[in-house]
Length: 170
Image (cartoon, rainbow, N blue to C red; front, top):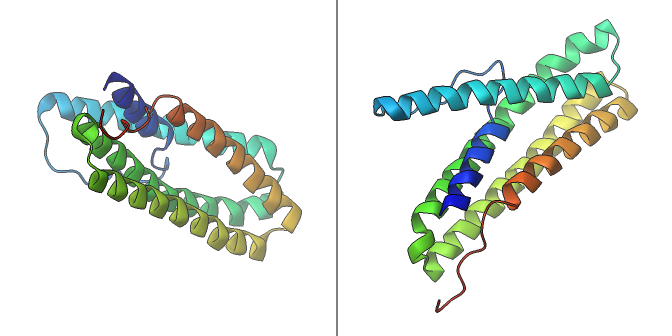
C-alpha cells in the first residue's frame, strides 16, 4: 500500500496542471487535506514550469514563433493535465481497491487506463496539427521529442512505484 501511496504522490507531483492553470475544482476537505492539496498544487506548478523550461531549452524559436507557439503549448498542457488528473484519480482508486481487488475492478481499471492513454495520444495528434500550422515541421518534431522524453521519465517514475495487481486467488 505504501508503494501505491508513493506512486500517487509521484503522479500528482509530475503530471500536474499547467503553470497558467487554476487548481482543479475539488470538494472541501479537512485542513490537513487542504494543506496537502496546496502543497501538491505548488509542486505541480513548479514541475510544469520546469517542463516548459526544458522544452524552451531544446526548441529554438524566433520571437515571432515563440509568440504563437507558447500559447498553444500551454493550452496543450492544460488538456494533458486533465488526463493526468484522471490518472491520479485512477491510482487513488487502485490504492483503495488493492487489498480486495476483484476481476471486475481490474477490468475497470484497465479500461480507464487505456482510455487515458488513448486520449493523451489523441491530444498529441491534435496539437501536432495545431503546431504545424504555425511552425516548421522540424521544430514541431523536436518539441514533441522533448515532450516524449519528459513523458517517458514521468511514466518510469510512476511504473517503478505502482505494484502489480495481486495475482488471482492470492
